[in-house]
Length: 546
Image 1: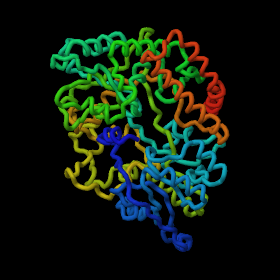
Image 2 (image 1 turned 120 degrees about the vertical axis):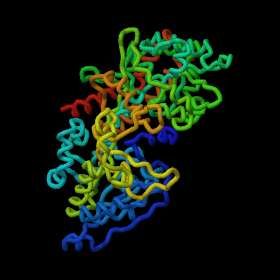
Image 3 (image 1 turned 90 degrees about the horizontal axis):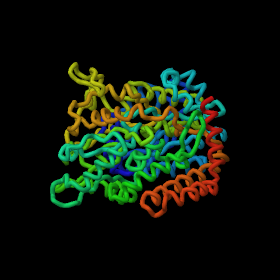
Image 4 (image 1 turned 90 degrees about the vertical axis):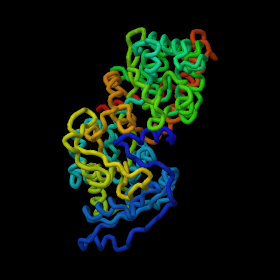
């Protein structure tokens, strides 16, 4: 993940994750007397592999001590830096020298559905169904209460081989937002655009009417970046013509999968974007620059240049705490296209598995580990693990504190002194924690959405403009494919994505004429075996729906 992008996310209240490089790996081997301890009523010793950041030491961590006392267990950790986590996890499994359990953060390393099936069927991972039934009432209740959770964790063979985090980040679920300089709108006497035609007229005015007032035509009407987290201008704009998930470019209509980028509406969306580019309304750098370059453009303090920027949140392209111009950027609602289409890209909440138990764990250890997963999934466990200690990092809210929905808040975060080193009293967003939308919304946030402290409320309010424009059906990120199907489909998926994006850029920039090259473009999908790709995913999708 790009550090600039995540830095913007980390200011959000409920996403308090520490991101940075980690210290050297440390490893402890399990005690040979662990089973004797369990038999005698002593703590059960378990070994866990986990990525660790430099501000956290799991072995001396306050939350570790709480968990060990509460659950009568002793955790011996194998830790690794974030950037080495995936490689070391795979190496451990392939060598056969792996611990009782693996835990991680979803954005650092997680098991894919195909990996779960592969290692589950090989016997490396232990099925969790019976363990959950016997020892995990919270997990069991959560699967009954959250409709998408049970279907996501259940493999086609009926087994549960791993657990994901549930993190219903409301603003993250609609990543492809557009932020426009409303200061410029007011100066030029323009209203917030609602349609593609109105948006084009606004961009034209930004380019030609000198809204920054320096007497030069140096304004950049629209820009973005070639990064994740909604910075692609094409995602927001194409959604006024046909749904663009900005990832697989697949669409679901009445249960049937198709490639959105092969539809006639996609062609019309390309024509619209090509017209913007031809008039100099889209910054050419939007297709090539990284987040750092995007922020250098948007964060100018001497002269405002950016009219509109694509991004999940505006901190991607402007400093929320240090640049007063950030107050001028407000969200553009999803645009309505010429055929009345108005979509918003939505992202499913679950995309990987961060808690698994291996066949190295004895029955006693399996029971202890599933109890740990169950505690992490409880409201108490989630709060203490991800936020830290009550009275130190957070507290119960007062009667005057308002949550993100304007209702009395349940919790309030406590600010640590500026510059103070983070306390070693939480694990962060690791393992099977559960943050529903209601839980995340229950935390107090300042009412001033343009103040840096009220940033989470600002994003919450912005997202309400997009919520309701998502399609009725979207392809989930959790798609179970067996090893053979996954191997076959992975290369196809990569090649199709690359083909769509390369041609999209060529069509928009005029390197290819859309009308004369369209049929050849469609024919190119046959060489990518798109029919077989859709067949594989359709079969897997149908199984999940059942």
